[in-house]
Length: 297
Image 1 (cartoon, rainbow, N blue to C red):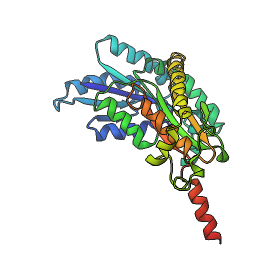
Image 2 (image 1 turned 30 degrees about the vertical axis):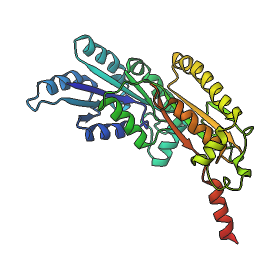
Image 3 (image 1 turned 90 degrees about the vertical axis):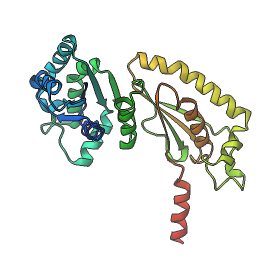
Image 4 (image 1 turned 45 degrees about the horizontal axis):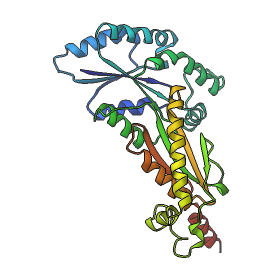
């Protein structure tokens, strides 16, 4: 039987993961007291219904004491011969605060106090569980569909998993640098399709623009040097415990050059052992601004 323990930060997406696993055919139980975990595992293994896959959710709702006991209970079960896989979900504190404010819910540890302090307290309480995790997914920048893809890849398709996620983001400097960027690259030195009449209305997602930008020797050299640097940095970030890297690539408007290089770098890493996605933050903003201006007239 495949048994998955889903845990992690409140607001990081545990409920969504439990629903995804349930849809994938897992027998799911959420918020079971930790003291009942050994009994639950034994019952599922002995069940006459032949349960092949089960998932259990554990989080702060179990209480401080139970949460502290969880790590030792899970370790004891593994030492007793049970096969358990621990999935730990996390997200940055600002994003967790934002999610709680949007849902108008109170963090279980807040009790009328500051939300960010409650989140950091929870992070400390969960540190031992995180250390035992087989899989760590940072949902800070993940959409639900992207989270589902990751869960299906690990627990349905049985693909190899690396606890590291790359996000390539194109942006326009005139709209500001992405606040969550770990690395920022400026490609405004490359030939600009904006000044070519046939290419101006297109974007870096169009083959004509992509070919125009990447026909430049400087663009090819930049891509190669950027990949060399990332290949050096990523293993060192992983060694320091980092689970995701947001790489922002900017040009003036975020429509041509930055989109092209973001697509090029995504191609370099999409089939590697790392999780990888791309996002074009400002690709439509010029078009929307022009529509608003025409409507004002």
